[in-house]
Image (tube, rainbow, N blue to C red; front, side, top):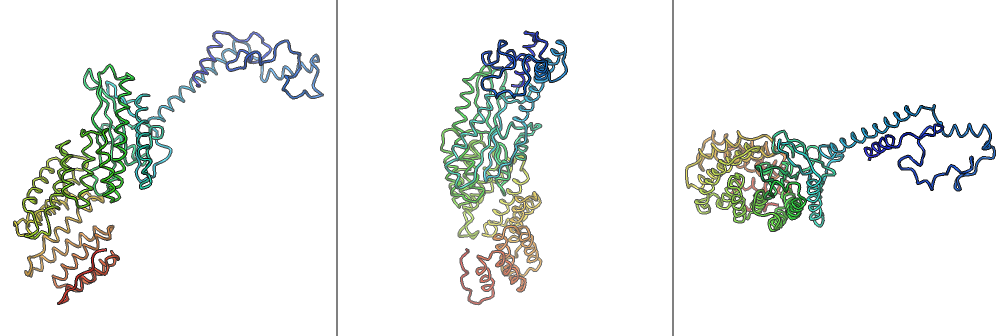
Length: 548
């Protein structure tokens, strides 16, 4: 608007010239842009000094029209500043017009920058926070820039996701912000996930959606929708975070890149996929809260919708379905979902890790000769090794530590069931899991479980007095307890195990203290832990109360 006003001002001065009436320091209202039509302006034949019909009456002491005072009054009204020559006035008006144009250009630049890489004026605060950035086109030299059509497509995705989630917002607080609030995804400096990290930092989102239209060879263009899961949404399973394609790319001949028909096709595809992505987001939110049944129901809806076919990106949906089923103890179902994820992406190491873990839990029993399924345990070792060959950044270290923790558990279970003598292999993998620990919350969980595994491995055989072995086991359990201080229930369980080892080693006082600490850490199960200690020294043990 500013540019148009400035150009029009300059153009009128250039084409119509300056008013010839030099007695008025200004432009005649009938010639000035935006002035009312001549019928609404007082004519030159109106009586001098008369008022328009709707004007207030002139003061009784106003000078008459024919007096010198009246001429002076008119001069004061028309000449608020010193008179200027016509060329000077023309230059002044042109200068003002150019200034208006420049102001318009600067405002436009600021608006474009504000709509692209600006930080949002507020940060999202819901349980699930989805940022949909303006989609980009990539030119032949790799520069990214938004267009009206791709930004409209991004807005469509945000609107469709919000519409899909609106009926279910009672269970989780969900926010979906589109391009008007998020803008464009910033430059990533070559890092595939860098664009999302910046959006997450500035908006507090935990899922980011974008799309990119780029050339594919010399005669094709391809539009790729993408999304990013931030690690804050999956605490303890950060290896699930990262970048995923939002279904198969949409391709077209290069000549259709700016064709409205092609962009309508993109909008149609995205509208169908947005509903599936909305249910996926809701399922991930329930998974993060430990609501595994609700997560499974949401993720199944996403899997069943036709917009998201079994193509690129959907492996993460099946992975979460497998994890939710495994957490709920439905190991056969979990193995099936992990298999579907691996079918889409055979190099998806996390799917193999999940499958191996589900196999272990399904076959371990009580790690006794009559409860273990030896063949399944050996199969889980093979799948863990397959997963180790497909570890990928940025969470390769965490993934490797989880694989070594899993292998240590399998070897320890086989050895405990007297099916093999693999204590050394178990010990080696537990130590690797500890050494590979990342130090963050997810890595600490792996380390504490590896220390707990070592506590079992270091125990001497039943009936064998080996003070050094008992001390190694006690030290391992103490390390595990120290890492579990932010998880009261797990902390209490580990204190109970520590107390049992201390009692077996002859340290009755230490055992009592450990069981008392367990009861204090988990008051709901305090009676059970105290009963466990009483039963250790009782000639007629009584059953412990069930866990709360």
